[in-house]
Image 1 (cartoon, rainbow over the protein chains, first blue to last red):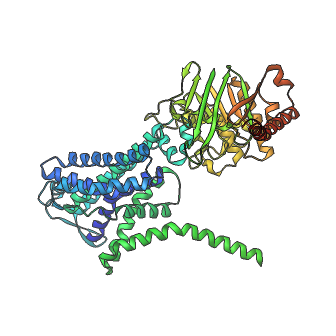
Image 2: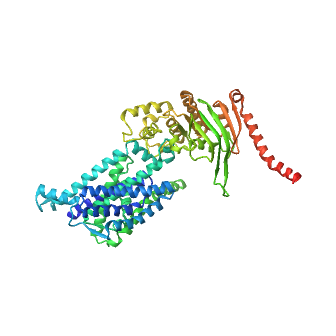
Length: 313
Length: 270
């Protein structure tokens, strides 16, 4: 049970990543690979600031801004110098690898003895219900501390979701969505689409970096490798969310990304529990996204095929 | 209102694909005038329109709109004054967004877009009033995504959107060319209504000589990146489709003769 709660908590933390990729891939139609670098960038920035003694809340906020800066660079490379979005992302992602090593000064930075946001939550839990208390849920014994962590993450992600939903419903946010939907049209209505894309990719990477900073605090270390495969991971969450929710309206799609992230994390935890070799995790994730991408096309072909057969019969 | 002074544009200069699309076009349009631009394929009529809209910057010449020199302005900055409808019905609307969201985007054309709520409750009734005269049943489908609508419906909405805030200049780029004849005539009727209601200064590129004869108060015929003929007032009113056809034939004949004449002169003098 505590494994389950742990997985859901990580799933919710990584939902920030899913939201980030939802912004770049779905709202802006911008295949942004910067995420792989900015995830670690956020973790590295957050971790080293916390180690340097900064307030963890402030450190996480700085990580968010750092991610935004990385995203803005990608956006500028794409819009200003007309470089393909994929390539622009790869350039920034590669550069960030060195930046991350410089930020941390080493390839791995432990946070176990530092005060993080989660230490605050643990202290709060001790204050509320005492040290090491356990409670039972449906007959399982779980640490109260874990429940508080989960609750904290849930509230946090809820706030971010509501914020995003509100933002993309404002005049500015509506113009951003239109930029991803039909840039020619919205330019003819007086919107500077380049500025929109730069801002959008920046916000997206802010979320991704925040996910990195939160994960580093939760698991107790930042590692220069931790961003590898994160883009596909986030995309998988978004796709699962869309498949489950099956509704195009903004609020549902945002909620879907969060639900997708939690479910995907749970699936992975179950698969690992059943003996999946952790080394195979990335290839399975990639295959999963591949199948999810081609499935709608295959279903359509199948339908056409059956219709044709009916006509012939 | 609009003054185009000797604009020139060459695409892909210095390459095998070099196209001298505009070779010194000058047009002056008075306020409230409705101008049809005719021309063969490749005559530069759409390019001239796009030059005014700011899809690209011209190599030479000046574009002055209502006393302001907009030659170096970016496309989105010009949109403050210019409304546009495109040839492709898919170009003028955002397919994934609802009808009301598209309309609300149009209400902010060229204005600052802040963090105010995009769809205030009172504005939806306003939208209902806007789309009801179209007689397309859109008033009950305001929340549907535009991508589900037909080309004619989307083009009609684009026209509403481009004129939702009165533009100083309306640019129509063969906006009925991709529609079936019945829908096209419906959209043309609507175009005429909107233009005469708001007394809009309009520049319309068209393929159809019938449209050019029936609509507007001026016809400009372009050929090989230049203005070939310009009919206004009484001349324009007397013009028939047959006259236009024979003018086109003249232009074509000139094209055929020119190289031959050049050959002959060469043989005589060189």
